[in-house]
Amino acid sequence: MKYVLVDRYAELIKGETAVAYKNVPLGLDYYPASSLETVYSSALLMESLAQTAGMLIAATFDFQRKTVFAKIEEAVFPGLIRPGDRVELCARFLERMEGHCRMETHALVGDEEVGRMTGLFTALDLAQAEGAVFDTPEFARARSTSLRALGVPEVLKGAMPAGIC
Image (cartoon, rainbow, N blue to C red; front, side, top):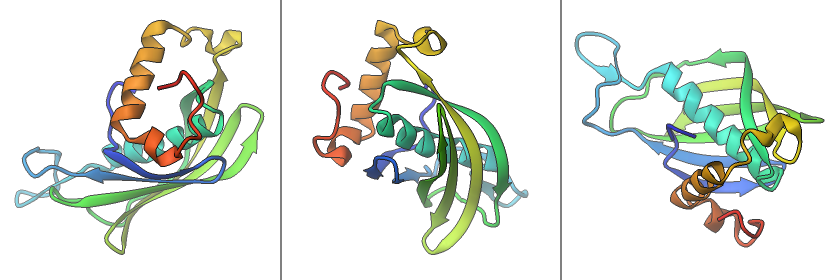
């Protein structure tokens, strides 16, 4: 992930669910909703939700696959996210097919739902031709750095495959 829009993972249960958090900084201009306020855009929220689901998929496949967000099936954003908010990002599997996963995600600020999205992801096998382009030392190094920074090894509590971090 070149741009990480998740700050920390609180829960990762392989094959089931993930919970992560995004703290929206006060000092950045995201999107002017009106002349009076700025908000975290729905495009950034979709990416935060996709990254949460992608990490769940990657963990489920023991980080032996590169997750690619393939299709948005539905996206709804009933609330606004403002600078200073802490967004809870949740993801769960709806369906697993060979190399593909349908995921459901939602975002909360406190008890208010501010977004939900359903989408299709592809999980490219790094050992096969489809994913070989990602099986490089640079990719492995970047993956390891990102996983440690996001707290994934601590959340998986010993369920991390050897050599990933």
